[in-house]
Length: 350
Ligand code: RIB
Image (cartoon, rainbow, N blue to C red; front, top):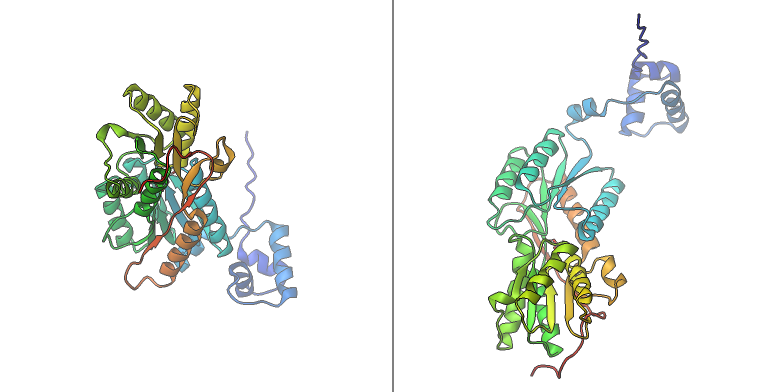
């Protein structure tokens, strides 16, 4: 015969009796809604600890329609760019009394949709989203409509969704691509290849557009065989080098969509006996911590990653506090971080 001894559920009533206070006083201490006399508060906390009371946050959130949780949906937080941004958002959210639920979409529209279902079901107070970013981003637009219909504030970071009615926090990718090309041209490079980002992410399209503009201004273009697609990770950068070398192109420089791939490009060039920057110069994008740690340290276009996290969280909390008003669209600047992976091969272009 099995005897089960159910431990009785401790209720707010038990706490009130133990502490010798009213139920409303216990509620005020648990919800921190109204200041309570310190000695009384201490007695309530002592009763909670002794009896092992666990307030039913789910029931409370239904009553008060807030959960103090935020959903954060990014493509891949194993990428240092998203890892740093997610960490800043989580720290800033915690400081404001919010918990963050982190989800990875892997740029999958199926996962993106599934996670938005989960976040809405969990009644998050708001969502920060770096979407799959496929152009045209119908899937994201559909999911944003569902989030709007649910009345949940949302901020999109790092995806240019044009006039989609949602707060957007972006980096000037066009400017960043232009800076990368200008820097290489000023160092005498003309035979330049580009490792573009996965699928048709709006940041990748913006960077290449800026890159092309700088080349055009110098009377050059970017031939189709100078472009190769990468997956955004080290191995994608390494594979891209194999594809470029197989085209027997004359190459003096490579611009990569992000630092992860730039680091993969550098390793692959070195493994084929080529020097960086002696034989081939390399420029990345993001300025993740590893960019300065590898050899040679990567010259890159820095994104203000921590500022994006802080500003994205602030935009969401502002929207939670005041859901009215037109969506905002903020564009942050990039800057060139010159390190060791680029060398001058001739006098600056006139
Ligand atoms: O490394 C991740 C890249 O994808 C970054 O450049 C960021 O802009 C994202 O789009």
